[in-house]
Length: 622
Image (tube, rainbow, N blue to C red):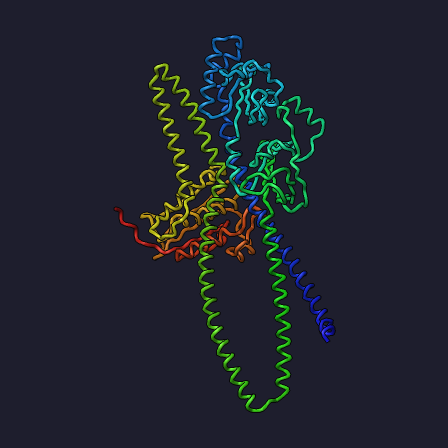
């Protein structure tokens, strides 16, 4: 009897195992794909940040070699390298410049490749007199005027980035000025981030990295010709270049790859795993033959996928058992109805059902209260998520402006160095008038740099969420100031209309400026490639409402774009350029102010976005 019952339940047990296995497999596969997709988006953002930090670190010193051509003593020494009277003066100048710039070394090479002056002239292992004509940065500078090179010094064995520029007079090339920069501080800052990063050269050698043991390893085997070239140029000072042990597992979309790094020796103490499976995303660095790679570990993705697979299996088993119980209950009720018990039994059954319904109503009431509380929590969570997306949008705008900002700050910094150096000479000569003029010019440049950084600091500040009276024309001007570099580079003609007296509205100034920056940025993107772009911005009062409009002279909005303009994740931009959340978030911000945001095509051409918010009284001055 027992064996027959077991055989009768065997197909049900097999069906349950199959259902659990299929559910677990599907949940694991879907969770892993979604996790990798999220990891790819995070990796692209990290690539942007690391690329910007490396370009900024190198860009600080890019102008420095060329400035040595402004020093008459340096040029005179190259014209007469045997003149020992000038050598001590040039050495002392290079030593002082090296200390102030914070570089590893600065030296001058004559046209034959010999070092004639160096900042480390006091040291026993000074570069003076060395023949560096075999170094690639010297040959590249002689051939093209500038040289860039990463390698290990042949004298002290220090790795660094070399920037070289030719020094010439009116008739010929006299020599080459070389600046050696340490990127160690940048590597230290990378070692504290959430995912490891490394930079490889054109030969696949890791030259920079957040993991110390990865440095000067190779991503692929080196052939004999490459190793012979290294021996000739001494780029890595004959250092052993061992393989990193990185193996590609799978090729993904958008250039991403799944790779595995083997664990060799004792595990290093780091803030992130350095062995196992990773999502590798690479990007070439502009102006160099280097490649920057971000490695995002898949441990968390695998853990989430396994936990969701387990939950799916348990859930499938629960649903299956619940179905069996319901089917069994249905059969039981059918038998009871078929029996037609006595009137007393029917009365008892009726009372039992009434009690059950009462209990169900009480349980339903509790469930309804729980659902209301859950919706309140969800609304608070959505509000917090919107605030985080607004802050992320601000940082994205700052990232887009970073190149222009670096250019704006590099020019004053170079001018400050030249003016301060000239001021010392004029002061030594007793020319106080010229020295005073240089100091006034330095003060103007410092004020200019302070204005640029002050605008960015105010824009990046996280909103407090408190509403106050905001001057609308001033908010427009602040948004234009943040985008000044993009506007000037594209030659945008700005037509601005604001009434007097200036209208005020009760809102958050920081969030309002975020909306205006988004609308103006979209207008600039719409006019990309036009020969004479024009941007019209106006502010006017209509009754108790303030109306702000942003109009571009681009091709206008398509019918599909108008139909889905404020829907999340709808965008007309190329993949990877935007997420389609800018207008959605902006509309939500304006709605919180009690206003509306709409978009349409202007009758005269182009698109126009209209923002309407209630007016408020001008705040009293203290």
